[in-house]
Amino acid sequence: MKRITFFIAITILFTSIFTSCRMYSKFPKVSILTSKGIRLNNEVYFVIHYRIFRRPEGIMRFPDGGLPKDLINEYYIVKYQNSNEENKIIYKLCTNCLVMDLHFVDVSKYNNKVYLLIKFINKDNEKEEKMYVINPQTNETVVKTKKFVFPESVDNQDIISIKSTNEFVRFIYDYDKLGLKNPLDFMNLSDKNIKKVLLYDKLNGRMQVALIYYMIKNNKTKLLEEIEKENTNKYIAADIRYFKEGWSIKQLKEYYKSIK
Image (cartoon, rainbow, N blue to C red; front, top):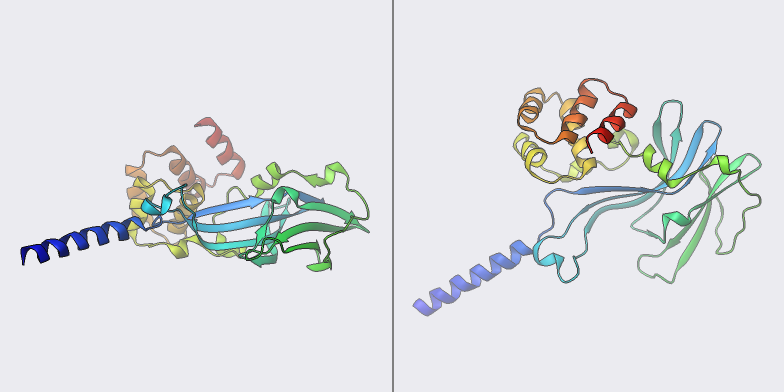
């Protein structure tokens, strides 16, 4: 009897350890990567790779760090308007597909129209490649071929660097307005959990801003005040001030630099 009890106890112990180790992070991480862009009049067009994922933990990290669990993996063409510093999703390219490298997204103009050349590979068959030549102003796919040469070159002043397009999407917090899946949909949004996550967990910066915006949008004044009192993170304090005091993006970026 004792041997059976001991065996059951050991089995339960190892099962619980194994199960707990096969977990991903409780809160998701957001990644937004950009391609270079092309300017037309007062607008800039470029591609973003939007991912929401959970990092592997415990046994899932072996042997080489593990693979994240994708919740959202999508590509979009985005229009950035200089006049109001706002992004707008204008075209969804694909879901759960792979671009070989956003650095190789090319741009061109022809007859006062802009084009983006995008190379995709099939997620299930990496040998299968597709080239898309898209006019983002009309969402028209102009050409689908592996070999395509743009009819004319673009002035360098109209090509926007990846560094610049990254800045365009650096401070996104209203995912619903932009038309992207909200990463907060994958979180427990109880007051207790929000407070714990912001104060004690190492959050991805985009998630941090999204949570602060969520509290302000939903009038969670008491919760926000509690977090402000207990918070020691200068970046969280800055993000709260951005919303409460009406800072501009420029002010926030300058403040970020000053506390590095």
